[in-house]
Length: 589
Image 1 (spheres, rainbow, N blue to C red):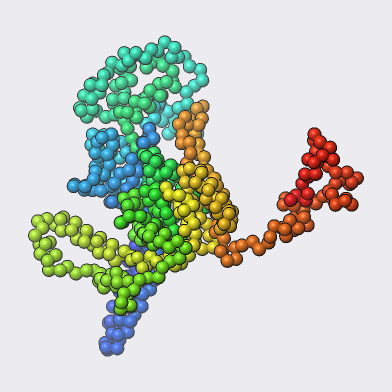
Image 2: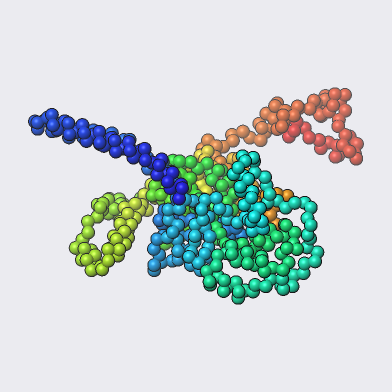
């Protein structure tokens, strides 16, 4: 909640300036009205008011440049990251009656009304009352030293407050240990509290920290363990009986990581590092037009929309009657300009012509084009309520039902006003795209070759596939037809490390492969051809000194290459007169 106060303070001077400007203009207008008494002066006054209004409109900031909010707004999606590695999506709404549950954790539904207004990064604890926000400074995993030595922690806190000395890391276990684990036997008899007792304590409303302390006190082998074993025991009990999570903003990286942990097969094993390389190799920036073909639940399309920031177009190709990735794109919390930059194009508009040429827009017998666009332009906003709509609103009992009905109606008309037609999609495809991205389960070669005519020359393309063999065939086909340069076939390898005092090592479980990438730059079909034949290339290489800058070998009188004394270079295991000796590399060719 501290971040909310800070944001309010930072916006206050700007609002004060706007209020001062309005007061100044009002005072000047009132003075002019008092001085002037003729109709002409009134016209001048209206002109001045129009001028000041235009100046104020010019001073308004660009809504596309507005920074995302640092706190959770109603309707936003957040990601809850737990200490044990789980990541769960939550929908922050104040009322969800009759809708899908906002979040479900451990087969239990929790309300998210109290999360609206909290800053991102807040740590939440699962309790009987729901998701309880903790004060600033709390971590997802409580400090085990507070349970081990609470008295020493109090003394250390007092000393730290008195002296400004740097803190000393006292969490790391010492090397010399008095106890060991040689006499410990795992026979499930050391714990006096049973599962039924724990359930009784939970039903009584006992907090998770109190349950962890009770289990430590009733453990007969806890005091005989080493410090390292004690810390592991406490952490394990805290994750089970005192679960906490951190509320994280939904970005392209966090959404991809969360869905990868949930079901990587739906994403074609697309990791967040591979997604970052795809955005980097495609050279996507504000103002670009990108053509996307994906079957990764819309994660690539949502990541592109966040990267463009509302400037540019994303032509996302879909198959079927309608796009099926709206639910995933809603998790990105896109603004209206970012969401409006996504243009859904049916696959029939792209792959209909085998030559990659776009068919002209259809016309009727009267020569009128795009009837859907004309019907959309006839709509007026705001749309007035008709008589039957007013009668239907009058029958509603509560004001809340009326507001929900009007909100749905406004959203429906907003979709009609912003929905593009197939003819407009064809017009967008007439302009060459700045980048092509493919992350689909289809054959890469059969998908990329029809899309290359829509790509502008000297622009990059990126093809992602979870297997290497299809990309190898696509690589060879592009080389054979001389369609692209700077072709690269690479795979991403990521290793996660555990960084702890004295226990830094790679994680024991990690993903094996994050897929393969084929990148390249399209050549111009007219001027992007090499006009030099192989014979002329050999002569030029002989003059320069070979492909790698090697000096040409000297030739003797017989036209054979040799050393300074005229003797040819002998190969190992044979003489100069043998047939193998004549097969020497001449001039690097």
